[in-house]
Amino acid sequence: MDLYILRHGESGQSLADAKRDNERSLTTAGRKEVEEIAESIERLGVEFDEIAFSPLPRAKETARIVAKRQKRAKLQMWDELRPEGDRRATFSRLARMGHDAEILIVGHEPYLTGIVAELMGARPGAILLKKAGLVRIRVTSLSPGAKGELRWLLSPRVLKAIS
Image (cartoon, rainbow, N blue to C red):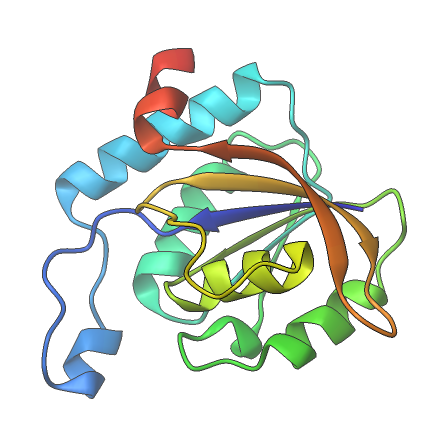
């Protein structure tokens, strides 16, 4: 399985009130940047089977923008992709997908880099994923432990240069 991990686009400053913070959506600049990233993904020839996203508005918007350029991808909200989500539940879902699947997950930090670190056997925080940054991991095992090989770690700047 090729697992692609995309952090949501720019959504303004974090808010102290958790409820209001969870309601933040993409800024105008964030939407524009994600549109450029989606074009770059298309130019790279990547076709997703499924795009899974956190239920928070900024992740949902990011996923929908990317999905507009995808021919076959099915959009699906995964509650476990919330910022406080359970990585084990995410790995369990991924384990039910085919070995040849091309899956994109869209979510938040530090949850996403926790997934990357676990798959690579790295320490948490070893990788920085900027907003609208993209990781590609070839998942080699999800059971008994999650393992994978890092194929790409692309910053938004590099991705925009491709579009």
